[in-house]
Length: 403
Image 1 (cartoon, rainbow, N blue to C red):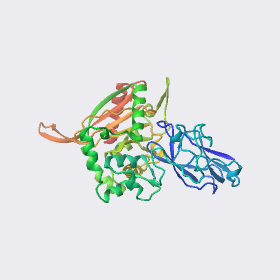
Image 2: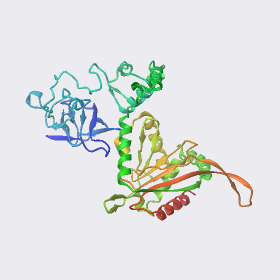
Image 3: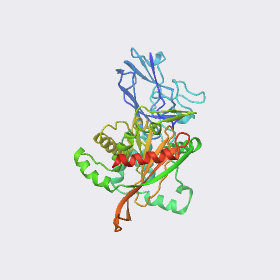
């Protein structure tokens, strides 16, 4: 018999939601088969079977489960429930007991549900209501769409795309009510933080509390870069913009500036073997930082960022998309933003900020007035490892790499 235990999927969450079983209880599985989908504060991740055999659910559907807890067990043969098989979908949800599900053992205060009674989260009525992912729930809050409306869709799991399609079919009857409530300043006008935003808050708090950060900003003439993007887009047959070019250029600096891609552990720095560039995406429902692992070619970078843009609009990231960055690029596309200071993400030592290109009037070499297109490029860095001179050298090398 082998246990499938929940791995630690990220550093921001202490528990995950079991949103889908991909293999029914008692059914055979092969090693490597995905068996369940867990949702973290920002993504969904599939867990796989390490061995072949028969799968037995331990955690119930729609329950919260902590890293290290047993999600399921694999036995050589099917085991009848009467012989002491693991607890299945009739398990009491973790949210209703205040503790994560572990190894099929329920807290003493919990009552065991009938095997025919599916588990349900504490904030969802047990009347056939679906599991609603956090990106979907955040969009529902913004649009004033009710649980009853998404329940009417008849879906077992409601994702952000389902809410978008529902919103596109007609106006939400509660949108006006919610606007009025917010304007009145009453209790109904409060805005609860989503799990995504709570995860952002934890990361920011950790960063500010543990990383002595500094910031250096320089002005780049990005006009020539923007002119190049049109030809490059035709060449690689993918959209190429400043984001793609900066990812490529930053990754290329890894051999010359290895400490900028390192992590700090006490009084020691641990350099990274290869550059893994995180890129921020904020589509209005929370901040995501998916990682470009393969920076070998501009086409590969463009492919990856195009896939991430689609995932950001749907709230459809996998946890593996969001882990492993050793440097970050934060993008600011609002034309009025001329300065942005990113926080240094825990586990990294640098974050590069790119503002939206702006026209600037300058004097030419002959004294004539002309214009150019500029962007402010800033580097936030961990002062334990990097000093101002190092930051200035890195930014100078980045400018040369982009020319």
